[in-house]
Every structure is written in C-alpha cells, then in structure tokens.
Image (tube, rainbow, N blue to C red; front, side, top):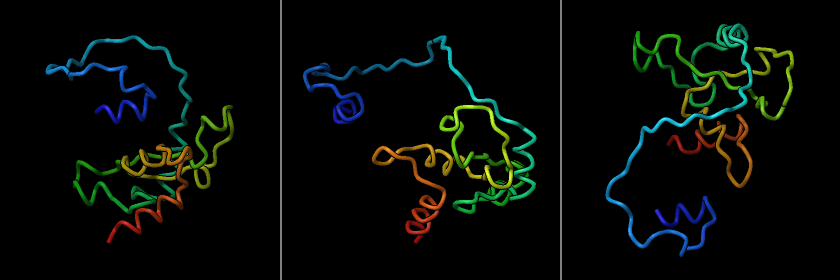
Length: 131
C-alpha cells in the first residue's frame, strides 16, 4: 500500500502513518461538479449497426458469453477521445467510433509511460498475451 501511495501521490515515506487502520469506510455522499462531453446515441447505434456487437480488439461477444443477458451489449469508443478534440464536431460512426468490451475500453483510457494505447497497439498487446 505504501509503495502505491508513494508512486501515485508522490508523498515522502514519512507522510503517512506507521500503521494501517483496521476499518475502512465507503459510501459517504460527496457532491461534485464536472464537465461531461455529450455523446450522440444515434451515432452509437450506427456504429454498432456497421461493426456489430463484438469487441473490435479482443473479439468478445457478450451474447455468445452470456446469452440473452448479453445481447446488444457493447461499449463504443471514440478513436480520437473527445477530451482531445475539445469541441463539438461532426462524428462519423464508421470512422470515428469503434465497439469495444468494457475491459478493452478501460485499457484504451489507461496511460502507459504517459500516453494512451492506440486501438492497433492494444490489439497487438491482446494478440501477444492470448497464448
């Protein structure tokens, strides 16, 4: 835990207590204010109509895995993230969006050495580790 805190919060080792508490609390309500980029549900639908509901990176189909429960379930990822575009733009569902499973989606939004993996980079990582 101490190594994690040091790595991600850049604290000196003396900045935290000698002992870790035995009780942990969660669930308090905190009010926050954020900016959220608007998504177009019709563009999402068109992306899925064009590409299907399989993850474009690892090939996972929720319907094949979970049956009826997984039918029509998939995340849709903006190939160029909206927070990089920083303005309203005309989205092309065929070229700007890609269906991905939640795990691959999370990995696309995770930085390695300060940068995000591209779709092709992540496909290579999955292929290499799928032995």
